[in-house]
Image (cartoon, rainbow, N blue to C red; front, top):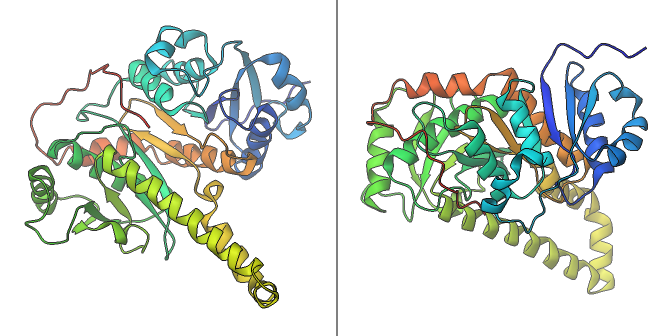
Length: 356
């Protein structure tokens, strides 16, 4: 006899599109099921590959149902091409489950551009939002912060930036548990006269807006990792460069440390003495520990996992989806937008996004 699924959030999980394989994706669902006892899943992908893995995780019995899809979106597929066959892919079917109300959120580790294109075409933008933004959680010296946009929109005007700020603050209140997150606009300097006209206009609007956040003004790139702000807002072009630079710097630092410790007997002795602290550093910088980027501003929740995330990392992305559903982040964004007047919105654009 099959157990009755828990009456909690339902996650549509694209099992096929990531780089880590079906076994890791199903194991991630099992980890998330242990963390969130009321969570259940729709697993989209090739049933012949998923079923044997699902059988290895008895905790998922009655809490996960396979929806067969033989078509898989690859990392090389162009978004425009994927849109033509979205309805037959595991990625597209997972997002459609959200659209149809069969799931509360979709999670995929697949092609970012394709995921954004399908999600935007199927779900459209919320009322009051011109463009969705890709937001992610980043490690800082103090804890974690939120940054957006990370590549969905290469060019943004002041209205876009203000909308990103509203969405980012709502995301931080939900995922980071902050009552009033500190928010800054990424700029080439902290002075009020620095930066583009769009940035200065956005800053003026945010200063006067009555929102559940503390706007601290402009922040420079070196403040992204300090933890002095909880939300960093920028256009997708600058945000993606900043993100990739931070990731590269992290690899540089860990690589240099490794080289130094291997260079001599004293270095090896130093590693032995400091290995506990180094492991703590490695854990803090591990992308799996901060996994789960979100396309904010859509009429439905879509969470993007790192393509190479392991089971623990993908489970963390599922956890982000769970928290956003639990706290109804869409309602929070709509309520905050109501207090800002910035003219008409587009809201029905189907232009292919510039996702990185």
